[in-house]
Length: 357
Ligand code: F6R
View 1 (cartoon, protein in one colour):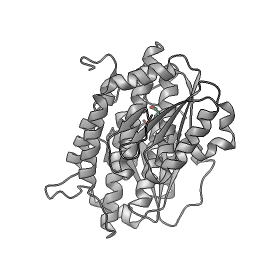
View 2: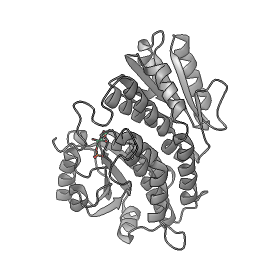
View 3: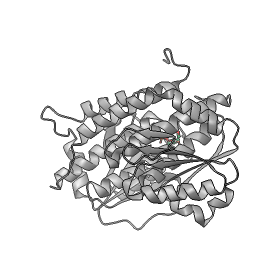
View 4: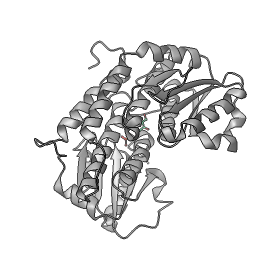
C-alpha cells in the first residue's frame, strides 16, 4: 500500500535507507562476518570469470557490479545485455560463473540465456528480489535483495539493493581469496544508508532542480566518468521512462566524439562528479558544454565539490557513491514526470515484468 504517499515510486525511493539496513542485517552473522551460502562462496572462488546477464536498470547495476568484482575481489567480469547475449555469444573462459541480475526474476530475455547456459552445464547464480521466481528456481544459487515488493514500474530501491548485494558478494569473495581490504562493507553500507536518508529529507531541492531544468525541455543529457558514467546511464533511463523526455547518458570523454553536436542554448546537462581521479576532467567536460550554451547541473560529492554545484551529496566510500548519487537522479525524474503530468507509477508502453523476448 502507498500509505500517505501520492505514488509508489516516491515511497520506494524513500524506502532505500531502510532497505540498506535490512540488507546489512540479513547478510551479517553474530560475529559481524558476512553471512552467505557456502555453495555460493565456493562457486565464486572456483570460477575464473563472472558473466553478468541483465536488462535495463538491472544491467546498469551489473556495470557497477563488474567494478566491485574486479576492484574488490579481483574476479574478471563481463556484463552483457541479456537480449543480445545469444547473438554476441562471447568466448567463454574455462570456468565461467553466470550471474543473472533481475528484480522480478521473470524477465524472458534472461531466462532464455539461463536455459542455454544450463544446457551447457555452467553454474548460475540469480540475484533477485523474488526468491521463488523462475530465474531463482532454474539457477543453482540465489541471492535475495530483501528490498520488499517494488510496485512502481520504474525501478529504484531494487537497483540500489542490487548494488549493495553485489558489493557484499565482492567483499566476501575477496575475503575467501585471502585478499586484504581497507574497509568494512557493512559499516560503509551503514554510512550509505544515512547519506540516503539525508537526501530523502531534501526533496524540495530536487523538485526545484526538476522545475528549473526539466519542465519544458525536449531533451536532457547525463555525463560522468568511471562509476559516474554508469549512474548517468541509469539517470537517463529513469528520466525517459517516466517523463518521456529524450535523455541520454554518456561518458564525459565521449562528448567531443559526436554527442556535443546536440548541445544547444539551454540544453540541460546533468553531470555527476563523485570520483576524485576524474574530478577535473569531468568539470572540463561541463565547461565544454556550457560554452555551447548548455544549462549545467553538477551533482558532486562532499570534499570534491566546487562553488556553483547544484547539489553536494554526503561523503561515502568512493566505490559506493553510485548507491547514493542515483537518488538525486531518481527524485529529479520523479518531479519532472510529476510537473509534466505523466503517470509516474505506470508509464505508457511499459510493464513491470517483461515476460516476452
Ligand atoms: C527500469 C526498469 C526496467 C527493468 C528491466 C529488467 O526502471 O524497471 O529497465 O530494470 O526490465 O527487469 P528485471 O530486473 O525484473 O529483470
